[in-house]
Image 1 (spheres, rainbow, N blue to C red):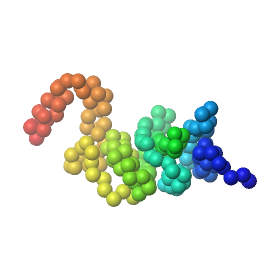
Image 2 (cartoon, rainbow, N blue to C red; image 1 turned 120 degrees about the horizontal axis):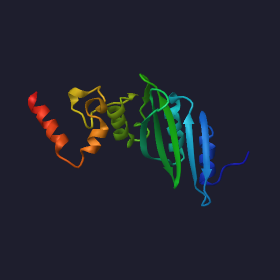
Image 3 (cartoon, one colour; image 1 turned 90 degrees about the vertical axis):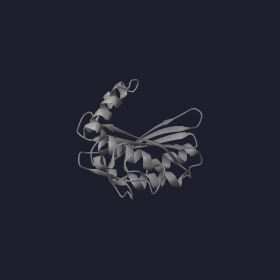
Image 4 (spheres, one colour; image 1 turned 60 degrees about the horizontal axis):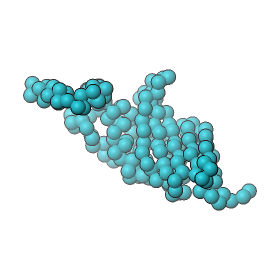
Length: 171
């Protein structure tokens, strides 16, 4: 067995040990883009630790609804010296995913955001301070309170904020 020498070879060797499907796209410049669909969400933290061991930096986390079945996909995007690795997990309704904040501190904001926006459950978090919602709204998804499309459409007007203020005063 030969020892991997390039960054791309190290990333491929690391991601190929993760349980799930790996899709790699080597680039002519020596970099690589790798997508890993983890077979089980319980392996996420171990996968993140493996990537951190080879110098990965968490770039962002993206949560998105699964259009085929109830639930969500969460994509964890990493940069390793210019190459990218994305770990994807599926979280069904009522299921939770383990926090990766102890491994990558910058995951905090992202995790709190997808808990509020999508209602995805988290385990192992020390704090679940809200980002956007009042503390009394804890446990509710923001989309249940104000649809995101309405927020986006009203971003350039005062209409939404005037309605929110009127509702607040009515309480």
